[in-house]
Length: 314
Image (cartoon, rainbow, N blue to C red):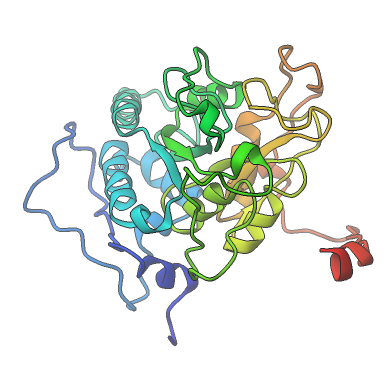
């Protein structure tokens, strides 16, 4: 395994495709003769394991088509997720429509920002207008919201391509409903995938989206992020709206990003954070530029560890 990174190892789970960095073609019909080479030990990082920020740079520079990228990600989901079971609902048609819109806007000179044209996914606890939102519960198997959650609306305003909804435990509690798939940790089938945001952790770690949203009431962002080897952030209470997110505990629920890198987490948090009058607990505070704070200078910072929680109770 010498010389193979953790992302290369994860890439071996499936098709390991690398999408050529072509200029925008203006069409969503790829060249049928173009092959997508598999990942190897040559040091090249497969496209699906690039950071959100790196993919965004390629899109902004028009070196990567959102349409081709989205199709490649949907193909990877089809090839890999039958075993990993991270997705509850794949929104292929909606994703391709959003990708085409993003491509037209960027080609026309309208660039909404770093998330524009980037494929992401959200936990199936977040309302999506016209798309079922089950929350891991059989009683909600046919529930179709008539509006988006605020976090979904804010991602859409940033120009993301929403690939689909991600699996979770029943009602975001401790166990899975027997009628629903249980996500599989991409590092090993016998390893824990985490608690309720397990689908978000698995999909992000396995290169099935470039970032995801999870929710955390008692560890459900933090634990699956740890278990799947990614970055997860439980935001300050009230910083991110829970409107349209199926509640577990109004005084403990949080919604936040799960990504490959800290910078990617900062990007997604900046997109979804902010006051929402429709959420009674929403904090009316200014939202800083989280990415700008990532200077690398940690002088003066201190980290506190509650030892009995870390060393004994957990």
